[in-house]
Image (cartoon, rainbow, N blue to C red; front, side, top):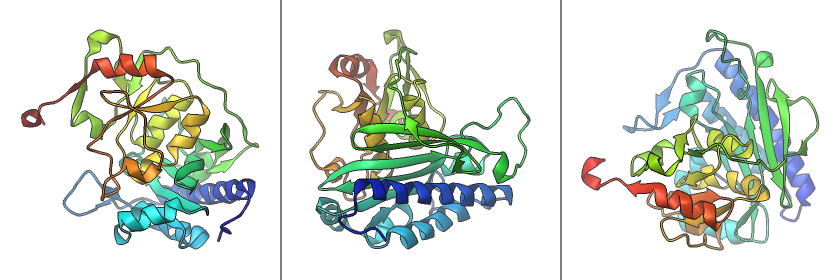
Length: 302
């Protein structure tokens, strides 16, 4: 367990150790073969034993100071708000973001964890253990040690990265350089695509490789210029410290208003921001250009 007043460096070290163990669990279970279930009648919400195993590891490591996807249903929004508002560490996690990519042998999946206090996400770790899998080879089941990946982290307003092998870092964290941008591509996740479309005549083109963690990795490594956010709490909280350290901010669509001061105020009673749309951009000019290319899809056409 993490002490409420533990130094930020100790907190990040604990998060990194967790992410490496979680990555190895996910890779080992995938190598052994996966059975995919769904969370109720919503076939868009996949579930595997890896989601549940990493959920259990989260609770073992971070205990009662934790909000995570698989058990958040037992916690009210008011309860989550109270945890996050404390001047003590609260952790927000997604055991596996991009479960369908994970189960389907695609690279855009991983584990995300944020450390929050006083209403804000201030440090985070995102581990994508299969991010560098060979796309020139025919798909096959491979052992954990064959999987190369990427780890992203943030603390004290600085972003870091390291390559991984078998879910574990192959060298120490290094500063993550600010991407130069200029690809003309913007992130476009499935949830946003249900309600919005993009006017291609504005010179921006949508791209994505799975869930929020893949989208963030593409943005952090310069493959995307900007992206959207209308995620759930555990998808957004770990992404924000890394992207903020790289100079990105949230702008509300369509008026480009600023985000609320408290992280929880981005989300409704179901911990969801699906009814809102936030632009993740470097500055107001970029946000205005992206906002001008977005069109709302009429409800009758959804």
